[in-house]
Image 1 (cartoon, rainbow, N blue to C red):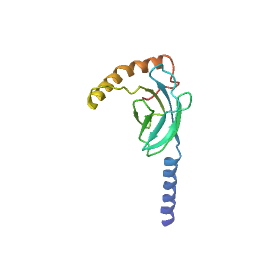
Image 2: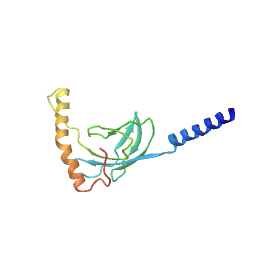
Image 3: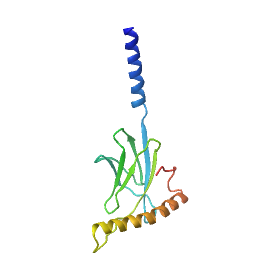
Image 4: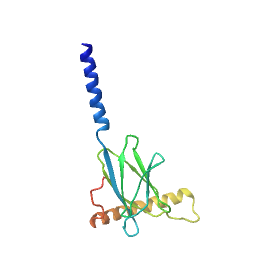
Length: 142
């Protein structure tokens, strides 16, 4: 009986390890500039304060999904920071980055509201145009 319990323990342990570590998920994506919808090279993609990927000259990036990656941040100087929540059913992300606006003589809160309003107004049009021109090779889950 002890041998049977030990064998069951080994079987389930191996099965758990196979499920946990056997599936390597690769997340791919493309980042475009909002000005002309051209690829955006050298953009940093980070998670938990660690850089996990950088875009190539065509704006493409790729990284291996690990259990601690739940959300990624996209950063570039002069560009609004973008955050994307990673879900299990998502393996390709298309992102359009918008320039960071400068608002003189307004409070920080007012500037943030203006940026958010501008972002919500312009981004849907830009994504529609990018998909119409087939700039994102795959269907993005964003």
